[in-house]
Length: 440
Image 1 (tube, rainbow, N blue to C red):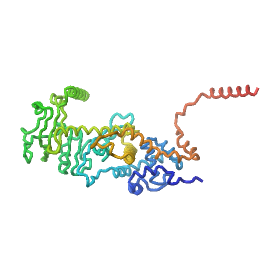
Image 2 (cartoon, helix red, strand yellow):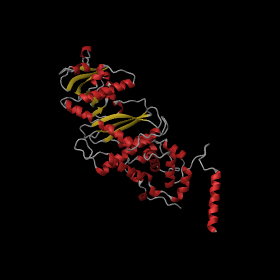
Image 3 (cartoon, one colour):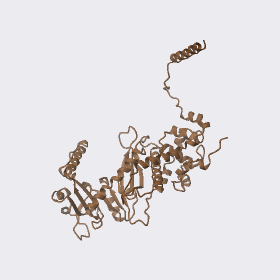
Image 4 (tube, rainbow, N blue to C red):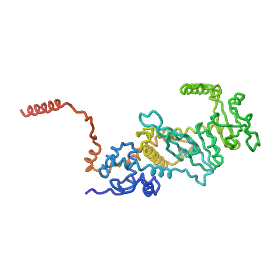
């Protein structure tokens, strides 16, 4: 008789402590778990999810580890249980991230961006990952996984009045910016002039007058500028709605401006287009549109703050290089694609939460002097979390034969390579002759 492990033996419970307290009930609510068979509890199911998504074991390896810990299960059974988990994992992840604003916070600095994910051998993007980062605490605020047909937009995120949102030029969508303005959410966005209908704004002007002669032609305006830092009060106008804003533009040093224009020409050649003279000229400037008043943030501060947007790129890099989010093994639109990505993000969130629980937040916040970056700490913390998931101390020696049967090769037309039968016979004969010589 095999004695089931006691609570003290189950180190995966440490992992569960980082999850919402009602994770068990949520498993039933989202029908990820309906009844126990081989996998008897939501806790065991989530451990299987983490073996597959966090530790990146293939289905058969996941089944093999589970077999060593509990009882024999096949990769087909694991696949069947995993494909029902995506709504549950998505709900858990949403509940763990602080998308709802704390009433004590006067405002939040949030950075949003998207990144592409593709499986091995894919010729294009399979999925898109969208995330919002709290720029002060350097913690994930919100994450979403979509198909390739859903691009970057401010409309997909949950903001609160008083938030200030930083975004790259892919978010130059006037309607979305105007919607955020009506919600008392300010934006700070790298300007793409061709996408933004901007008009000059006079001091004290209370309404936008979208006359053609008032339209801002920013290349012409900047050519007349003598300084290196220019601020232009503007109206953003689209389909009968408008809001006040400011364009802050900073001239790049000559060598950086030339490098930017060279990249612009290369991008144009790759896409079969020739950049216009205005496009090449504007490549030598950093232009930021913001709805934050100049009385609150002056031009130099806005440009400096925008450069902090790079932190979200580092988050994507850590997710891909340290936590292997770019090793998507599923095919596009496969059943397990979003399960794997969402499970990987849940795994990353648990690592982040436990990291800050162990080491605090003071060393990483951007509103003070920083003394470390998360790279090495994440690697160390990942090793700890992995030990909770795989639980080698619970592997049962009696289950090893069943584990071998789970992991062995499936019947297939091409058999595994072996030595020619003549070689095997010759080796047996040689061994027999050697033994006989030893006896003599």
